[in-house]
Length: 306
Image (cartoon, rainbow, N blue to C red; front, side, top):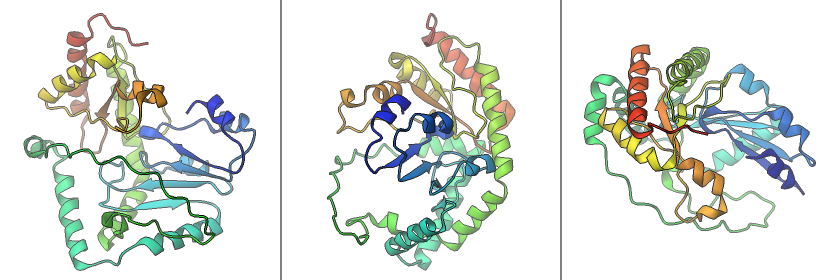
């Protein structure tokens, strides 16, 4: 978010939600300096990074940081999430609200998680990735546009009505064991992701037509490059034919008009996410970069990304 626009909207009693896409963080010093009216609470959406010490040390007062362990996250563990705060009262209140929405654990759920975790883990290894590509399901039909939530004037918290059943499901014993294992190895995950991002940057920094992400001291979920919007689909399809998937996240919702959020709409049409994960070797990243460079030479021969 643009800090100037954010400061102009900081009035009355409000909460500030900082969604740090792909793990790219906000400059909190600059954020605080332009805040005329501080928020009642700051929520850090850190779902796309690794919860390292420096990231958690940013949390002060009643700040609340959130990470998740679902599919596609750095710390995939089947299901669940975790919140961090220095405010014990806030932690107790959020825990109470969480517990009011959860369904009980069942044997069926536990067995289902075991199968899901195993399958989703093994298909990320190169030997099975080709098979997974062939079996990949067709994109699901777009869901109906969400309706605005009803205003609830009651002072007592009410669990949201109509919450889909999967979101009421609790974490199982297996999920929690994997979460704790990942947390104990957070430093290793962070160092690996930082090294992979550095290797991408070294290999791609001289490729014409690409917009590379700014350097980050914190681990990223993807190495996110940008290309001119009219070439994105061409490059994406070309990379797919070369057995490289560049997943696109956060396309604008169909019920939102492009002019409502012109910057987000424009950038969403330019983004390509290159993989960063624990199964990749240096040679894999070098091969991906070589393919990206070849595609850029074909589709961006005279381009120079601003």
